Length: 369
Image (tube, rainbow, N blue to C red; front, side, top):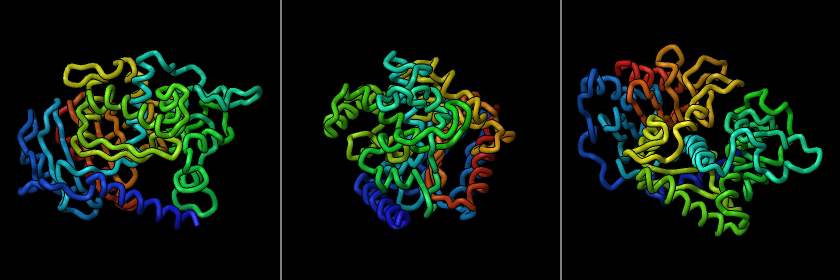
């Protein structure tokens, strides 16, 4: 039953993406590259030799968009057939990193504090051990809450129950209703539910107690326009909402490849873009640092550190590389020391992920350190 529900949900995802303009651009470039140029220490030819296999070699899946930025300038940009600069593409879990940045704005404003108990009223009843969970622990996926991230398990999948089952109407409430199974802070467990709890906290802060779904969506839209999408110049950004009016901060955002690159640049420049501060530089001391429970994860973002749960390529690129990652091979790679932001969007199966990571590692290594 859950698998059937997931298929229906994925159909809705595809339909909403098409309506948002994600399936095809009206200005697909005539050549395979919209931009391809030399950069210091790497030629256009060297870039092409590293990028072409991502599109032409089916062993790493289907690449729909790739953007390379060096020191704030696009030096390579290529799209798959039917896609172009105006195409909106699905974020999957890149949305988690966006949610982490939105939390960072509220922490920078002094409205939230990393080491205070998370402002979840349901946890602050007498005797509830979840009252000890901090915002820091939610950001680093070490809340201790029970959560199964299995996408196709017929027995039990909390993420499916949340997205398409009993928890779909109010996903943050469903996620925060789960019991503790570990002491907060001790154990890493990757969890879309944790990101939805964070999304709920952000929405609650912005709505100021308003429970009406429309009012919550409008408060979020105003905040995004004033503090995030507007200042960053994200022309194609669309986020989805559940029925409670909470934005889908776990997996359901859509934007152009250039929009994703702008978010990567915000991370590379530690909260400043085009000379304008968006959030505190200090936030990135936390967000980009390895979690004590998993060195390969920071605060809603992956790090290039060795761990049993590594998702990047430790030892083959600088340890300072970080990435927002999404299901089926969505990447926003950031290497501050190399002045580098790389966006790769497409569809890659599990058995192809190793080849995709290898190809991206080779591309990163083209640039001098």
